[in-house]
Amino acid sequence: MQSRIRNEKLKEKIMSPMEACKIIKNGMVVGTSGFTPSGYPKVVPLALAERVKESKEIMKLTLYSGASLGPEVDGAWAEAGIIAKRLPYQTNKKLRQEINCGKVEYLDMHLSHSSQYLNYGALPRVDVAIIEAIAITEDGNIIPTSAVGNSPSFLKSAKKIIVEISSKQPIELEGMSDIYMLENPPRRTHIPIEAPGDRIGTPYIVCDKDKIAAIVFSDLEDHVRDLAPICDTDRAISKNIIGFLEKEVALGRLTNSLLPLQSGVGNVANAVLAGLCDSNFENLVCYTEVLQDAMLELMLCGKIIKASACSISPSPKGLKLFRDNIEFFKDKIILRPLEISNSPEMARKLGVIAMNTAIEADIYGNINSTHIMGTKIMNGIGGSGDFARNAYLTIFSTSSTAKNGKISSIVPMVSHVDHTEHDTMILVTEQGVADLRGLSPKEKARVVIENCVHPDFKEQMKDYFDRACEVCHNCHTPHILEEALSWHSNFLETGTMKK
Image 1: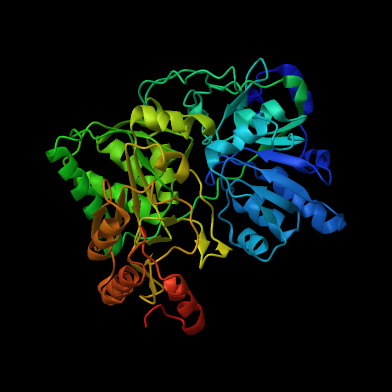
Image 2: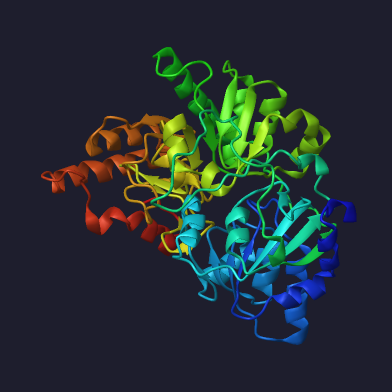
């Protein structure tokens, strides 16, 4: 492990996790590596949680990351009461509870904005950066592991740096990252990427070695998550999306190689991509945030030839697949900083096909990606907005019902808006596809009701829309305001949206 520290002077900074965590003081801003939970620090955060629990000291920190972190950070720190404020994204159950009950302040952000806020000075500077690495170069630069995230910006901003050298992350990851940083306006220029496979930066993150205050060794693996088995609903959604794309090819709006694919994270997103294995599409490329199992499998079966992302975040099965074939993947995967992987400029320039999931959608195409019943945060908006507003095609998908059919995922009015009707081009459920491009609000509503609403709720939805058109006949977007959110109210009162 010491051989991974290629600067001899820096070996003097090697210490235990408990010694290293003493650098972190109450009230500090801490920025960590990691993205969905991949490539994040583990032993130092766990040591800090243990220290706080034993000492009973007051420790309240503001925590920045690229996206969600594993339980060794978000979970352990929430349990120990360490997190005062968190941004820009999370998926941990305990932390979510602390956020929703008001114990933790949470800033849910477009991921591409998070490093910009820091670089522009709109967010407080990082006091301590904790970064997982596979090695440190002779010049003190950091070679990241399976995620780049916001690490470049955190290293630049930080006053002090703690580096975790991971023995679990394969050294073969070296060379997979392509680190390129942007200047602040007015000195910012265009990103010189013309295709997802272009390399424009360095295989390491530039780091001021004098800021490295501690180096620790970690033998903990990323807490990768199992994906749920692909169900019939997921297969139907995937089939509907693939059918839509096939029609676009037949109409001459796409070729059989499509355009660069972007996909959100999770079971449904993974299932949608998995369906491409049996499709007729070929020579596909990806420009996305996260590589999950399906994208790795699509590379192995020859469907995807290049993939640009911010992290590799597979299931345990997918992780083994990746490690067993790492030499195969090495020249096909490029890992970039978050502000490059999620750049709206790149989404627009490359013409990505953005495929993301929704908690609920309304009949006019507004999307709720983050809140349950409008008030309780689930995870966060993530990178969906970075791509949705700027993509060549913006596709949102969801199952038509939730809670064993008690909730309709298509509602008259969403209880929280993350993506407006202006960003949603295609809405897909297992029931069908609603192509909303070129339609007025009333036309959109009719298409959504006909194609996306579950049969158990279709007549109820038609009744609402017909009455809204009668009551609000002079309105551009008909609503009966006192009823628009009654579906949600009815569920909270009776346990079902059915009337």
